[in-house]
Length: 462
Ligand SMILES: *Cc1c(COP(=O)(O)O)cnc(C)c1O
Image 1 (cartoon, protein in one colour):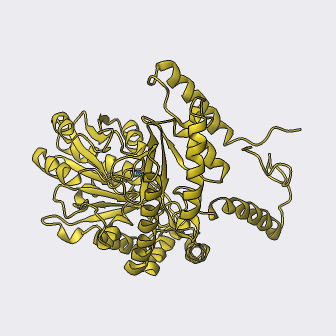
Image 2 (cartoon, helix red, strand yellow):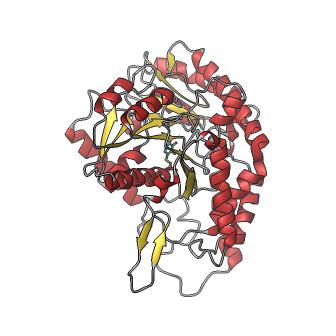
Image 3 (spheres, protein in one colour):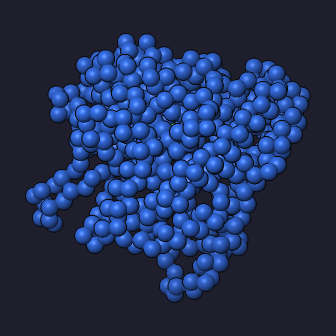
């Protein structure tokens, strides 16, 4: 697909226009682009990313956003509403994650800009609290399957990251390996509920005991599962406890902008002990511009995002979240049954609302190649090559699971017929055969850098 599908239809702005355009003309262009791009996922054939997919809900959130979008929540004297929104978002999330089970400390939280933001704030808090105890070379241990946001945060904050191996069949982290690699400089270990790749939940109960035994923190990454797994538990699905009911769990990230059905740009980081949150508060008391403090890494933040996030939670309520969770879990189970009906395909581990499948008979990217032609968009994985489908509300529309069954049957036939060839999408997303060499690593990084460059460029003139 071209990076510039609009260049022939709409003016390309290479400099600030001298005369401004009419609002109606600007909005018309925006509406055209939005409608065409929405049509892509409205079919229900796109994994993840559009968690709600309900334009009435988006319209409601946008109304809430619009009332406060111009407000900077750093200036609390001007917007006490922001305190109501933020405190109540944190309180509702602590309630969902069983903060009432906490004894001996006062739980707290903060609203960040997304999953990466929540994870980064957690890593920073662990580093700062560790430093106060004399830890000078902090390290953190994550299962290999945990999100790259941990690698990014450790890179940014000078924390050593130790990647624990996971079982190739169950996808579960090797808890003994984690146990052996905790040392005096370990600030925290990580588990996912559930992980992004496979939709499987790490043995958080065992990690909780391990964390308590060693006196280290345990971050549970529920960025993806935080707003849906608790309702799956209520509905009786087999989902282990992963929240503050486990005494070793010290922080949990849960993304409101995923299954919280809020607007993009928010997530909640919850703490068993708000003293840990406060360890990363920032102060500059002697600046000529005035005394400065901020509760997290961001400076100015929009009141609109807090208002819209609050509105999503309050509007849906437990009943709304439970209803959507039931539809999503039922659809995911039906789609997993379809995958299991093909002996050539294999689901990895015991997944939940998100599942991933590979093939031992052919390169599963042949399935991807075919399904792309039918409008499906999966996330591509490697080691082993696999395709993941995060089931969201758009897939719960009538007919989508049935179309998945029909298209997948044709895709498996196609893959079997082409198993001797190299799949076209595998070159981009699949693992490097024989493992990653330094040359392959450098080449792939160069291709990725070119891609990111191109995403910030206007089309060349002429
Ligand atoms: C999405 C996700 C993240 C990162 O969140 P962003 O919102 O993309 O920054 C972290 N962990 C898991 C499990 C996720 O699904």
